Every structure is written in C-alpha cells, then in structure tokens.
Image 1 (tube, rainbow, N blue to C red):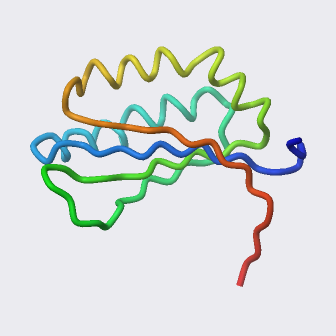
Image 2: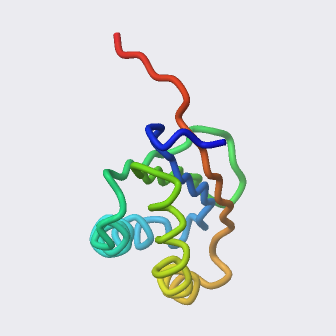
Image 3: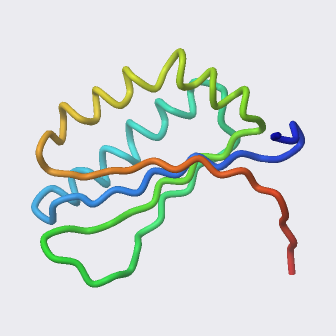
Length: 110
C-alpha cells in the first residue's frame, strides 16, 4: 500500500537515434517537459544522459517527480496520452522508450 507521504518518481528511459538527438534534446528542453510541468501535477523534472556504450543512439532518463500516486493517476487520465502521441508523431521510428513508476520509500541527504 502506498503511503500518501511518499514521493512518486515517474521515469521515462529513452534511446533516441543519433541523427535526431540534438533536435530531440531541444524539443524536450523547450517544449515537452514544459508542457508536462504545466499540468500542475509535477514537482520537478530532471533530464539525465545515460552513459553507456550504445550502437546508433543516445540514452536518456527523464525523471518527473510527483507528490502522490493520485497525482500520477490524474496525469495518466487527463494528459499523458495527448503528450505521448505528440512526441511519438514528431520522432516516429527514431526512438524506443519504456516507463517506470517508482515510489520513494527512503531518502537521506549528506
């Protein structure tokens, strides 16, 4: 059972073709992430480059933080499909993505 006090991390891992990677990064920074945050359901977003040996692409992790599972469910119900379709149409055949939902159960700062 999810504790309502635990933060939720919605992570999208994406591999984008090298030939469109710069266009994709610009799109994510100037449009897509802003559109997701404008829903008012997210606390913050981090876009991270995954350092790994790869053939034909670059991998990234887009980490969206939410206050609750209920906010995630509202995002999925009211906004996710439209935003995902827009991204998929713009970069059709140029990416592979998978999504993971995580519950933060413990954190400690140095």
